[in-house]
Length: 204
Image 1: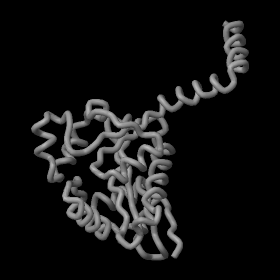
Image 2 (image 1 turned 180 degrees about the horizontal axis):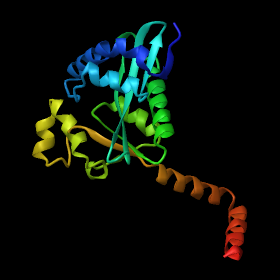
Image 3 (image 1 turned 45 degrees about the horizontal axis):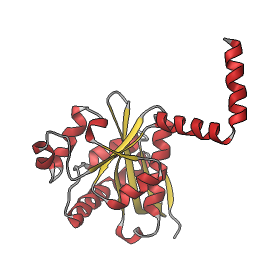
């Protein structure tokens, strides 16, 4: 069956409990940890248009949502979950790309970050342009770190004074990607870049 991925809305609130159940089961299967989220919290994200959901007809297939921190200077793509019967089908990559696209649309200037213990999620983030970073480069918003209290590894985070944990921090900085594109353009078309630079100099 074809799977459709869209921005979630109030009509999808009925899936919130199932999503939270799958998040918990997934954490248990990995034997690691995940910050717990309530159906009410997930529902709020759907109603606010800050989540994406994948459906095969009326059957739930996948989900992820957006959180904002430090006055929207940082955005986190969180809660990526794929129903068991839809795993290993490439759906996780599609859901991840969709929530990343939504993040860039809603918060084009924000740095997008992720902390995860999952190798698959790390690979997906890397494909989108995320780079591994230390926790010091992520948001210092206390509310974000409080969210880790529901994780079974929270004591590890505390013992290390929030400098490291079992999770890996990954960051997408839009400003860095603009620089990379400019550098690539200059390298590919040095003559044109030189002309543009000369024009700017003359105008000054």
